[in-house]
Length: 78
Image (tube, rainbow, N blue to C red; front, side, top):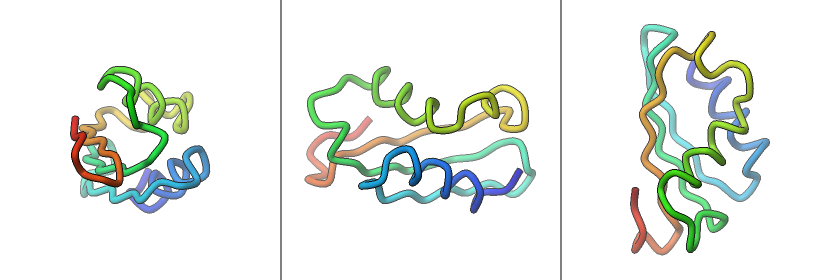
């Protein structure tokens, strides 16, 4: 697994999102996802939205994904 593939999958599931994914070992990744779809949602729900874009890869090919989720106004960061 590579960071570019993860970025593409998140963008497909959250089309309005700005996504940056880093990770050099192929199983541990960090992502920053900015989406208007996160507005008014708590951290857990935001993270579940991102995990849903990755489906069964979570816990398998992707061992760990550290997330930072934001709304475009940057007033809401988790």
